[in-house]
Length: 253
Image (cartoon, rainbow, N blue to C red; front, side, top):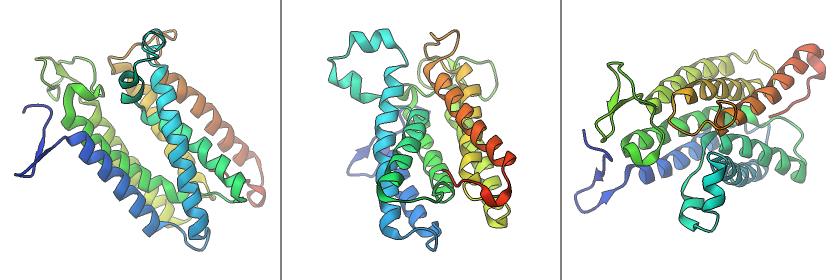
């Protein structure tokens, strides 16, 4: 297997990262429109929520990427290619969270909107990670060297943890569990999204120990610090929910 795995249409070859990233956004958005609870949120307000999520995700994914290696970022602050080429999913999720909450206040939405987003986001992330895997070394999403039989040589002769595939499997399992919980309708509004974020942040905090990225923050990297902040936030939300009577639960993303 040679990386990157180009998508050959006969008359043109397309880079897998570009194709699957575009497909992830398209499919995720379409699934959101098809599966959202239309009785809870008018379409116009739903579109504004999406706008807030996109803007927040774009900003958050860049900010967290720049914190991966602060010294290198300062050194290359005037290099447009370096500053714009990278992004992080965790930064995108947390930035999207902030963007959605800000937009909800701007347009007067008071109820939870996250449950409708959880499964489309999971599906989009799974599709996107296929592109990350097919890109190989250039994507910088692979893991450290391993002697495990499932190690993948992405082109440098070193078998590495295919952390992109680990993430796809994890998201598939998480998505199935949350889908069943949502269908049962037994959880308070907003809990599906909170469980998604908590589960994914825990996964990323763990798997990033086998990512060959700088870990300059007391043995942790930028993504792990963001995961800790997100877990503290969602831990507070869920513990507060458990302490309050069912009828008084505040509906949050």
